[in-house]
Image (cartoon, rainbow, N blue to C red; front, side, top):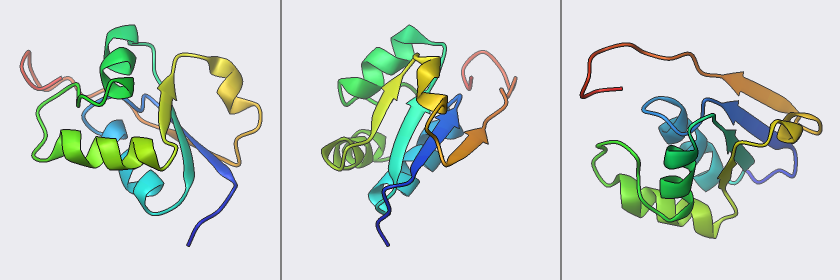
Length: 96
């Protein structure tokens, strides 16, 4: 079920947003994660999951090959068909 409509995941490079964005991308959707963390964005675009996730790096590489990308550019919202907003989870120092 591929589609050209763009889905933007706001807060999409964290523990909740990134797995969601990757699943949508692997399913065939055009997905962009927008996040404020330049460190997380750099890790994601280099193919490294920024937090602990079983098979995260492997799944991320598949999504990147399908066109998934991450950025801090708010202009990505302009032509989005769907915007998913992820709110932060304050669960502790090691799980953020």
